[in-house]
Length: 263
Image 1 (cartoon, one colour):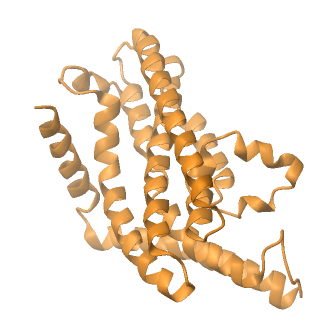
Image 2 (cartoon, helix red, strand yellow):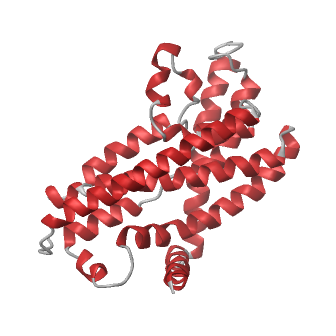
Image 3 (cartoon, one colour):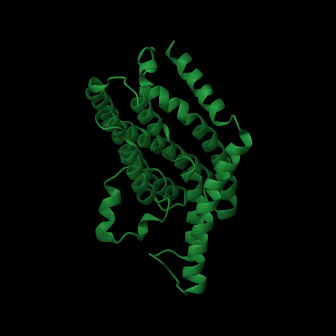
């Protein structure tokens, strides 16, 4: 049955990611704390040292809250599943998966998303606990985490499309790295996207990247109304459908060039 191989892939992916448990938790802890500390030091320099009262309409406390809450969603964002796809194509290992009665793109995602689901659960618990200290609505934290998980799917879909470059070039590593750098900047992970000048705001609004971190954070902090949130959920659904079609088309066209030579 279809659900059996998906459940098996999910368990296998989680076991693989947490084989070295201490290393796994240190990696999660480090990826969460280090960027947060850098941001907090930046806000301190701007407000406490530089004497600013507001930056892009945000106060010191608001930016601290943004850092704390956005950290929850940066841990859910992304993953290296698209790099795994690219490596399968480059090395010829893709052949092993083409013989199995599973979709290789879906299989790779399910294995890769397993630890993200676990991390999302941990972040949700932390976020709900944090909401009582910051005066936030726990229900909004739950909705925001759901949007972040949808963003994780969209992120992988885009990566799966770009990974097909490995069918045409030697590998797609550079393409995927450029994508990740753009995502880190345009997702709101590094800075709030409200820092963008209004005339340049169309740049991040025309991509789905803001749905990964900035959007969930805005809703969790109460910056978005419920109506705005559901509007963004609808947009994310359109991105999902559009990228699903592009994944199928790009793989159907590109796999014709596959020679299974490895390298």
